[in-house]
Structure formats: structure tokens, C-alpha cells
Amino acid sequence: MMMNSTFYPTYFLLVGIPGLEHEHIWIFIPFCIIYIFALLGNFLVMVVILVSPRLHQPMYIFLFMLSCNDVLLCTSVAPKILSIFWFNDRAISFNGCLLQMFFIHSFTSIESGFLVSMAYDRYIAIYKPLRYSSIITRRLIVRLVIVILVRAVVLVGPCLLMIKTFPGFRSNIIRHSYCEHMAVVKLADADIRVNSIYGLFVAFTILGVDLLLIFLSYIMIFNAVFRLPSKDARLRTFNTCTPHISVFLSFYTMAIFSFLSHRYGKNIPPYIHIIFSDIYLLVPPLLNPLVYGMKTNLIREEIWKILQEPFRWVVR
Image (cartoon, rainbow, N blue to C red; front, top):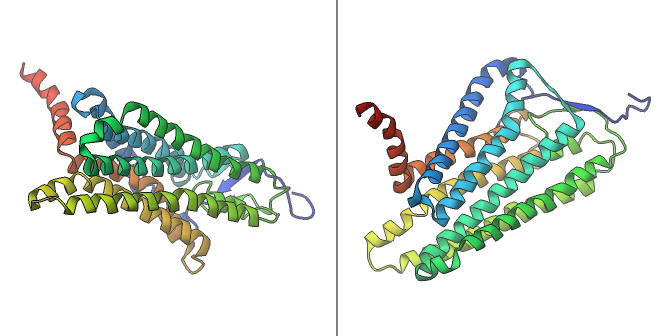
């Protein structure tokens, strides 16, 4: 460290959950269970969609990509969190920290993009059912995926570049469980207003715009549903949207709370904020396959077929 207490770190130290360090060994257990079941649930959904021809439809293709992203999202953060809780392994290299930051924020951006795409898919299926197959094509899906990926890289990439330009840092201790953008930026011995403003811009561009698009889609969907002649038809149509509604409400509620509490929740105890930030990245990947598995009859049927297959071989 230099005489003016400013230095350029080669590594950072992650605190974990400030104030609950003595409880890390117990916190490890539920977090480990959440991570394992998130992986198992999403891999099961991916396998079912791959091997079941009936599920080779746009709605389930989007769900397959959402499950892939959920696996990558929770894997970008969970192993390091678990190593902190179990092994007290707090160190992470400077470039490793930036890489983790890029993956976390990119995958959350991609998650949001897929949720918008799925809302658009439901809008077309309900509002323009006769034109669904001509509008939601494989070509459109590929284009949407490219746009979602490019948006994530273009918006998140500059955050890392701006951090690399800092002349020095006052500390290398991150009071968090993972390398979150503002948690790292606040350590810099420099003017961080540009970083803060750009972080708000990225959050608004992703969360704000995507939420607006989803709400507009569902306004049109509800308008179409309530025009249906019978109550049974309205319920059947609305039930096709309930898994997506449950998923996007859980994701955006946790995302908005985590974002606002980190910037403006000065009266919230740090450990509460950190726990919710961790839950925001780990719980949606756990809930998504459960919600779609329970709410979607076709997926339930295909999962049951796959689970029954070993027993059929035993009977034979």
C-alpha cells in the first residue's frame, strides 16, 4: 500500500454476509441446497424439452434458453459464495472479480430479455392466434436471441472498462458475497459519479424498458382474454400465461428491491441487503423450473414419461 493509502489491488477480499460471519457455516446449507436443486430442475427441463418432439415449439424453446441462462447465472455466483461460507475462501483476483461481475450482470440482462420475449410470444399466441406460426418463427427467435446477447455485452462491458481506468482504490475489501458493480466502484479513490449514473442508465434500460414492454404485452393479452365469449375459454387462455407471470414477478420484484436497497437503503442492515442480493440471483433459477413444471400440463406429462421409463425397463 502506498503512503497516501491508495493502491491498485491484485485481488479483492469478499466479506460474505457482513455481521453474520460466525453463521456462515450454517448459511452454507440452505444456499447449497438451493443451488443443487436449481441445477437439477433446470437440467431436467432442458432434457425434457430436447427429447420431447411435442415441446419443440417457440414457447418451450424460449423456456429451454431461460433454463440454460438460469444454470449459467447461478453458477457464476454460487460456487464462490459457497466457498466463502464453507472454506472461508474470500480472495478473488482483480480480473476474476471483473469477470464474475460481467457474467452476473450479463446473465441477469439476458434473463430479463428472455422474459420479454416470452411475454411477446404469449401476446401473439393470444392476440393473433391465426398468425402465430407465421410471426413466431425460428428465424425471429434467432434474431431475438442475438439482440438480447448483444444488448447485454454492449451495456455491461463499459462498466468493466470504467473500473479498469480508476487510478487506485482505498480498500480491496468488498462487503458483499460476490463482485457487484457498485460494491466495487465504492472502493475506488476517484470520482464515481459517472459510474453511478451509467449504472442507473443500464438498470433503467434493462429493468425499466423490459418491465414496460411486459406490462404493455399483458395489457393487450388481458384485453384479448376478456373479449372471449365464455368464462371457461377465458380461464383456459389465462392459464397459459400464469407460469410466465409468476416467473417475471419473482425475478423483477427481487431485482428492484436489491437494486434500490443497495443505492438508497442506508437504514437497512447490511446483512439483510446482502442476503436479498444473493437470493435474487439464486432463487429465481430454482423457482422457474418448479413453476413451469407445476403449471404446464405438457411439461408435467413429458417429465412423468421420462421418470417412468426406468421402471418400464425393470418390468420388461
